[in-house]
Structures are given as C-alpha cells and as structure tokens.
Amino acid sequence: MLFFALTLSSCAQETQTTFKKEALKNKMVTLDGSSITFKDILKKYKGKPIVLDIWASWCSDCVKGMPKVKALQSQFPEVTYLFISMDKTQEAWQKGIQKHEVTGEHYMATDGMKGVFGKAIDLTWIPRYLVVDKKGKIALFNAIEADDLKMIETLKTIN
Image (cartoon, rainbow, N blue to C red; front, top):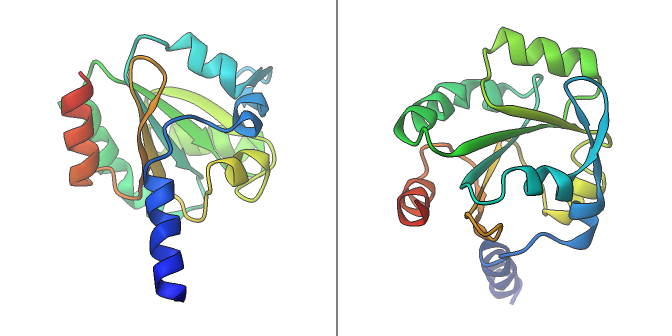
C-alpha cells in the first residue's frame, strides 16, 4: 500500500502544471539586492520557454551538473534559464555564480529549501529542474539531471 501511495504521489508531482499561490507570492532577492515575487519573475519572461534550475553554491551535485546545464544552454539557446539559489547568504550565492560561471537570470530564495518556495514546489533535492512553456504553464515539474531525456524532449516540443 505504501508503494502504491508513493507512486500516486510522485505521479501527481509530475503532472502539476501551475505554480501554487505560495510559490507565486514568495519574495526572492535579485542580484542587486532588491526584492521581487516569483510571480513577477515569471511575468518578465512570459512568451519564452523557461528552464528553472534550483541550485546552491554549496551543493556538490549542483556544481557537478553545471556542465550539463551549459550543454543544454548551447542546445536550446532561445530558452531563458532562471537560476533560483538556495544559498544561505547573498555573498555565497554571488561568489558561486562567479566561481562556476553560471550564465542566465539569477534570483535567490530567502528561506532555503524547506521554506515557502521549496515547500510549494515539493523541493526535496537539488539540483532540481522545471520547464515552463511560453504560456507560463509548467511543462515538466521535476527533473534532477539537466540532461534528463524528459527535459530535452519537453524543450523540443514547447519550442
């Protein structure tokens, strides 16, 4: 029974096509230190496909995955890449961007993985990738590898 319940739960995650209100209302920090809601971040890029990369500079799996993200950026240059950091400080976040030469749009969640945004997207592991289509709907809710075949296929179909 437990296996069946877990299977249903993970299937429900995979089919989520909209962000919860809590995620949309959540305030994040920009590189210049100002505050912006996740909803306003998404509005900035409406009409473009988006890959959200939830990461942190302290996360070894995130850092190991960066070459795959860069390959994805080369394969799909028309996609907007939003990096949402789960770092604990702005200093660590900004140093991580420079150190790992992360190119794209950058924001930082202010309350970590277990905070409002993390809970709203059922964040249990990073890196975590989501794909949002041109209309702002979630096309892929959960991938943990940037070269995940589901992610590549999703990007091919929404472009």
